[in-house]
Image (cartoon, rainbow, N blue to C red; front, side, top):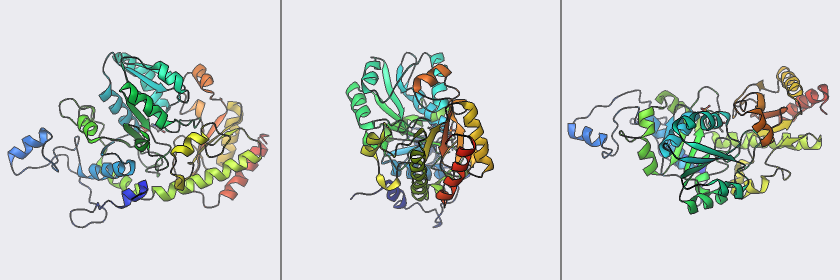
Length: 399
Ligand SMILES: *Cc1c(COP(=O)(O)O)cnc(C)c1O
């Protein structure tokens, strides 16, 4: 039977010990055992359903991790204190000194900085490629390459990674495909398209409330077990664990994700069509003029739409700033980084979330200094929001 990723979450019977429909929060750092033998077995990873210590596993974190694994269609999951916590935990688990990574040149700024500035300290080399150029991806693979890293929809140009094609490359090379699906939850199920490991910043669409940072890793049971191995697991030894109170509140928000994604997508598509009519330079993968449109369509669960991210190019940083300040005053939303919030957020990518990327690489990526990225909110009357944006565009002489 075909189910949607959201239905798979819905169908989980995750009620608490007392029949509580919102499972109670387990705010305990450690757990007692009635038999010493069971404690030893738990340390050896052999006692099913037993908890040991909350840096390893916590019942509230397990509820959220299980729900995310159900959504992704992977065997297991683990939740982290931030998206960067998820990404660094995975990369350090898979790579050691002397290894090599092939990564998309356009990734989240923090991911890029970690790969560019931090991994070389441990003699792990990264080759950055245009991830849509499959020949360049293949050519970058070396005997010591451990993985290809990409984002389904890359920040901030909204390039689309061809996951089936990339997974064909990683499978024939015997290496892993690691995919950050933060921009496209529910819309694309990377594991279904061949990703071995899916990472998330839950901070964005999945939580959707901008009240915390959190992250997740979805993968095979074997890989998740390796992360929490008491002897050499990065999750266990670096300690990026999520607080169970946060897990519990994120789990509640996860249950409305499908409704929110549809509204984010509906509103972004509406704005894209208006931007198109006015002749603005814009990026939205939902319209056929975007380079990745067909690739996205091939992977997309269409019921959730093409996503809530859209960017426009104002040419210069000055123009971008002027527009953003006007839009904030006109109640379009907030001049703020981040995304997936119920209010519209906008920022100049080159001067904020991608400022870790050196300017010459920004140019090489095609990232204009006047690029304004919107995370379109859940506005009930997007037509009205468009009128406000339009006024700002006219006042700045953009249209
Ligand atoms: C925000 C973000 C991250 C980092 O997540 P944090 O929760 O801020 O640590 C990673 N990848 C993408 C695509 C993001 O947007």
